[in-house]
Length: 275
Image: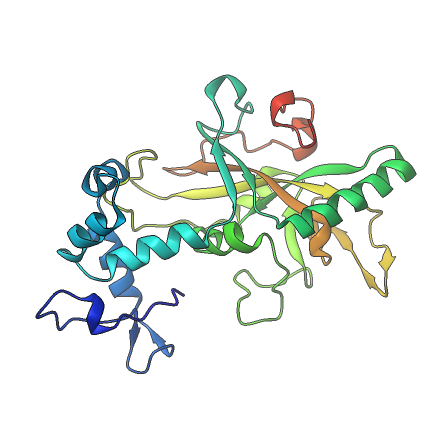
């Protein structure tokens, strides 16, 4: 949740509305309705640029006229996102994955370094350092994934999809399997322009997974397990990295039978890791 609590010094004169997105004592009950209502006040990106005119102070002043919560919310959203998210040009899009495709790197430099070292070890051992798998998750989870990468949250209060196959980060070889974990969002940001949204926004990632042996023991615990020859649960966060994000505005409209490994040769050279 947004770590935001305003002081009256940052509010327009006479403002007596809420100072945070919590009800009662700060940090306790979360006021999600206030958060959604505030986001709906946020102008489009084009309008924000025009309002700012190159000045943060001017942007704050104009947003304060709508709500003093708006500018801090926008500022925190942008500054807390450390992921690399870049739209893929049409000529480089991966076949069967829809019209809204993004190159996504959400790992920290330390995690990426650990991933590459593990991949190089498997490359030397097995002549194939990594494989491609899918990860579907509810839209509300992507806020955290963009900031912290994929995390093994099984058994914690942050777990969102259960653990039918035991603990771990859940991935799948076939995209149709991951669809069941995606959920959808029914409240659209009304001023969005780049991605239209009318019925149910879905997000799914194509991830690179180190080609470990199934069910090995690593430092006393398994790094990954396979289930039903399709689902893979990953216990070691260092062996999986998000590489591509696919956004489907009105329900999934890609090829449901796509296997991650089938896309290996279809990923343009310009988008391949280490190219």
